[in-house]
Image 1 (cartoon, rainbow, N blue to C red):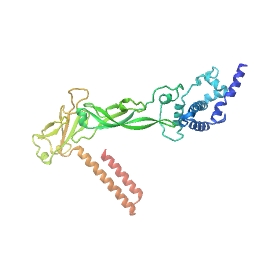
Image 2: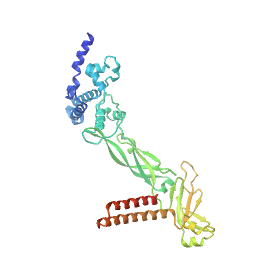
Image 3: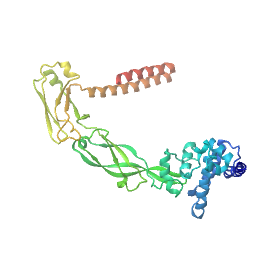
Image 4: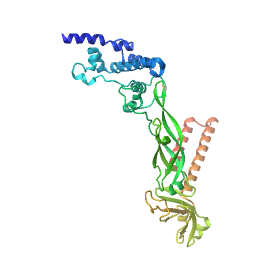
Length: 376
């Protein structure tokens, strides 16, 4: 007798979610999606301000519960058999109890639906379920969401400073970009905002060192932090290699031919002074001084080693008539010029009727392969 009564109750309540969404009991997944999207857009509380907001909140949540149940095959089967009361009770204590009906956050549910199905236009962003509850839980007090203020995620960016700043250490003023949460009729979305920030470049910090900057002191939790990766701009004298500083010095033809016993020149250093570099060229071959040259290490005159008081890298000086860096730049410029000439030649041959288009394509392909070999 008890089982019969439960069955009749289930039959009457098992239709409520279908009626709420305006679909039949044989509705397909696509029909359920379209019905939920249409009703959620209609009853979204942000689209029903004023006196109608309270009623809209109730319907918005009820619609989410209905779609959550009917879009899950196991929950739907349990609901069809026992109704909503049976679903809340876990199906009479059987193995389907794991589908115990829980109070859901309708804002979070709608945002997840929008992201999964990309419907209704607008910009979509990925959020984890816990993040969604953080973002939207406070919209509905007591609806299962946590009452934590929303907070945007971090945004990584590159900040450029001078090599001198990395050598000496300095606080620099930079423009940082942050993620910001903004409210829209479809829930919380992310935008970007900029701020003037101060970043401390520590003495001897390495390339790519990351520092986190809060937006205006971190008072606004709806604006996330900026994670800044520090990089040094090109320096006119030195190239940084880890803790070492490299410098290329071009020799004159007269110096290469005469190969004096001692050759010296002066370099500025990053501490604001100068360094005197002395080299012995006597006994070296002319070809060796032409290319690739020789290297001399000036010990302890490189970058300061981070988190130490008095340790430094080295200054590596290369002298040659033709420096490798100059040769690389010249080779790249020559390749670019030859590429342009090759394209112009093929275009001229093709448009004047002197060649087949496939031959022109083959010539360009061969040249690009050869250029890639030269540039490697």
